[in-house]
Length: 316
Image (tube, rainbow, N blue to C red; front, side):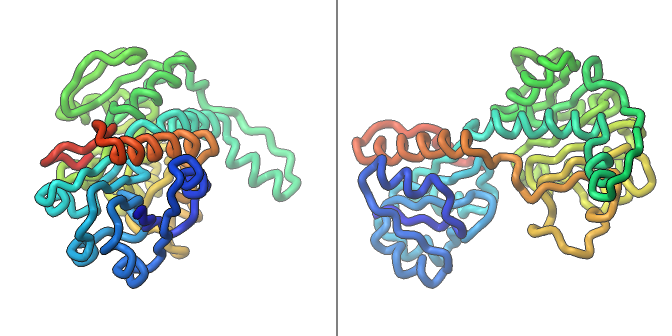
């Protein structure tokens, strides 16, 4: 039995049912999940949000063999308990890479060429030419978290003639990157960046990785982009940096609390572009997601090796 704990019904669910020939039980409340989970051998959920698979729910999941996350981040799952019970956990690492990379490049272009200001002017039928910032070609992008998604961001940025510096725990050469450094060189990289994109998973080490000290190091003309998790950046420190013009602008897809509170000052800042945790959503990424989930469901049924399985002791 396959149980979905997604609190919305993405297009992938009916597509998976058709592809694997099994009905998926949709649970949008914990009460419904507690009733369905005792018979489930596969659970589909959102790794970083949605209806959480907590210890209580796991305790009734006596037949559970596989947990499939539709996101790469796994920080809110009871990973220790899952691994202790030898329940396989697979994420969808890399599935959203192309979509998020296009989002980041599109955001850099939109901010550099004042698209948000033009849209506001269009709403008012106001004809006001604005002198754009420098073209992004020739500028430096710092990719904080040069994994599967970060690598794709770097590839597309390089196609726009940008200089690309990547940061990761275990640095190694990556195609299309001018340099890849250890995360210990974060401050050095930030001091060089015209754009800094944060695409790390949320762990104890990356909580508030970007804080007041980091924003103070950036150029006053620099743009900060967050497509990871809201808690990887200190939101109060970011608001302060934006308000005091210590950085030029921000493109934000993730926040400490989602939905973003209506009274957040971020909403009214003219140097902030906000999207509702939307960077990974596209028809193309949904097709890739469907294929990946179906592949692992069929692999489990056939007793084959799973893809994107999270190793014991790891969070992504």
